[in-house]
Image (cartoon, rainbow, N blue to C red; front, side, top):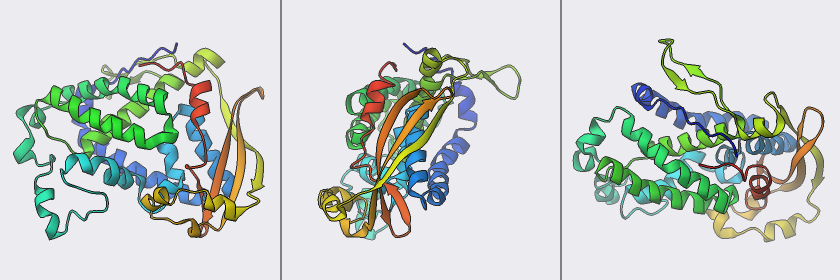
Length: 318
């Protein structure tokens, strides 16, 4: 069982909370922007996607390489389909909150501090935010174990619904916004990744405060302290029957990505392998990539990553 020490100093975090949250949200955009260059090449797209999953069990950021991030920034996709319906009662995906017709829905959103924020919310020094993230981590781990990242819909719906409940219990109010939701969720993503890889001790600028404790991760236990995993392409083949491939895609799912099957002009099946320095293979992933315009995207509706979590990461515990 991996030693899972969070070691996160939430009071120190509170000092830089606004900057951190802004960086977290901007990182999604930056990650996607960088990915666009990688995504001119189908093999690089598949390898980078798989590397994100194998190295830290990070299916969340891997989605930046997928068709789900084609039309919306991935952070906006999550807001539209999973956050806003909880923040704004009566909101439906695609609704323009800046439209005068939806002014009442926007004004009554739980992100309205004047209406919903208690003193606990307004005066939190990071301690309560830390309690919320800690409370949600076992939920995150269990959702990954139950659904795997292939079913992001179940993960997001269950996680954010539970987060709203936990936050109300901890803060004593109904306040809720996307920064609260992203901060807790991405903290859990990071903690999970650290449980996979282990962490080094991090000291604050005062040279005394420990921001992060040193911990031993699952991979260190399994492969040694200085393990190194390399992900590479071992097979690349064009999908023989593109018409049949496109016909098998779910139009309703594609619609949430603002796509149709007709937007796809090519598809490839790329097998990638994760191996240790001595060449020992620890896992493979069959990645389907599709071309839309000049860019390649992982088809997350056809690529199954759950086997990686079941075979490599099942020992991760909250």
